[in-house]
Length: 599
Ligand code: GDP
Ligand code: MG
Image (cartoon, helix red, strand yellow):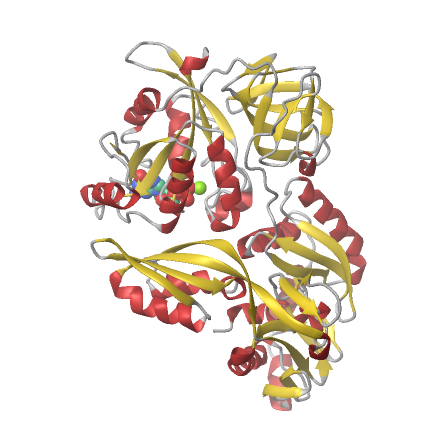
């Protein structure tokens, strides 16, 4: 296919507006996969993703489309973008590989925070945007209102908008035809030196890393030697090809084309998203703009429930890392938890996904400790440094101050929830920045908020206080000095180091009270009384007590139908323990995460 008949595009949307369903539909309509292998939502290929309905790793697929207007064959490369704030870095990489985007907006919902954020990235990259008003099959759809909203709020022309239903297959032909008509083909550039943008990479046990790229300048050929400019590593290209969506080898890919390469690369760290591929023989002088490493924002300890699983855990983390450059880990020896790892994640969803994969795919029984953001500490002597584990904080008399990361938060909400959301943001130490009228009935609220307050259950709270109608987006905005202290927790007289957290002095009392109350509900009762204390230094700020089990309660437990009890025991054996003993007290996994759910 000549360059003028190539179209490169992404689908951008707020989560759940129908991006994956639409991608499937486009694949089906152009018959890229036989309907026999057509798995629901082909582009989301991890089980976990499918279950949670989120797209984590992006991928590409090439659609062969014959345009009815001219009867010619077009190659449409559809590049999937992740749909969650934790992964927004990857969205911008994939958009840089495109000339256009389909902006999917749910006709029953309208413009949401991620609709806006993603559209702005697309506009910054000068992409042609085709609005798709999806879910018009639903009774509650209001396509006219939503079109007005897209025009007013997002500020893009909707004269070529398509009214569609990805589910019912309405508007699909029109979308394809609009792609060909409105999205410009890649520009041919007559440069000799190759520059290709990596928008995704994935580890495959048999072939090594598969690198997904878009050629921006020059040509990439099978057998040539390439260099990854950010890492500076050279590889010989064993295979290049296109994704239809099966991998189909070709001999070369030129300017504007999207494809994959295999080059005996052992880990995705060597082929990072956003990096530029060039030729070793004739290297480009400058890399493509915008490469930035995805930085972990949230750190948590990951420990095996059973110390003998340490090596298995290490192995599993190494394997996950092959396919997840944003995951970081280093060995940690905690006096309380034994040997484990301090892991860095992009956000809480990323943490959740990694934890689930460790348990599901590697059959490990693990405990993750309370997540922490990265603080900056200025000691009394020496330079400020970063701390991602409250246990590493120097004593109050050995530090001058602590700084914490802040985000600029934007929440879009129906007017009637403005009050509750402002209240929530303020209770999370948010500083009001702006309130903007968005469209009739909807408002944008802007706050500066400590990241630590956001990574707890903030998103869930926004959802519950707005009956699910509000949406949010955030970007890191820098560090600020605050009155921060470390709170420790003692259970049955023993300091449980993994429960220590850094928080604002003014909240210590409330959080301590709530945390000790929550722990009281979570920690199983024993035959003795268990006192729980939240302390700052030697000062107890809150406490609670788990009363001892009474013997008649025990008797009841042990009586009864033996076969039923055995079944129960078996079930417990199969299920993961996710417990850790501290002295005589068993701490279940939920106890370590209790701080996340504190209001
Ligand atoms: P994504 O998060 O943007 O990828 O959204 P999905 O494609 O996963 O869709 C979210 C939900 O909306 C799923 O339950 C889909 O079945 C449903 N959905 C998607 N498109 C349509 C549509 O056109 N009509 C209706 N009624 N439901 C749809
Ligand atoms: Mg999806």
